[in-house]
Image (tube, rainbow, N blue to C red; front, side):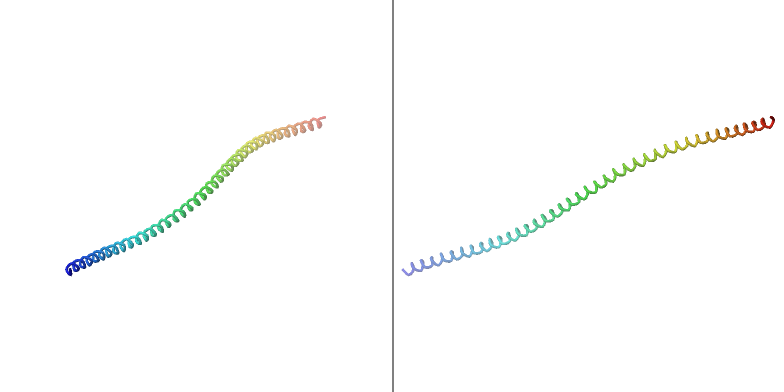
Length: 142
């Protein structure tokens, strides 16, 4: 019977060794899973932080782009307005030049007329002097 108890006691002892080994293996596996979970969480937090940073940069870039597009539109509007004003000024300048040419032509025509009138006046004055001289000569002969 002692042998039987030893055999049974040895079997109990072996079961405890097996239980201890299983527990040790489970503790090691649990530690590995815990460490991998912590590492995974750390990577997830790092990735989230990188994603948030990238989103911030994208939003900032988009805001800057919108601002530049608004400024571009405003400058294009100013340029269009300035171009329209320049075209109006060119048209007004051309109209003024045309008016000036017309006035120059009128002035030339008036100067030509004035010259003709002066020649006619001189011819009439000459004629009048000759008539007066002839009239004086005729009066003196009488």
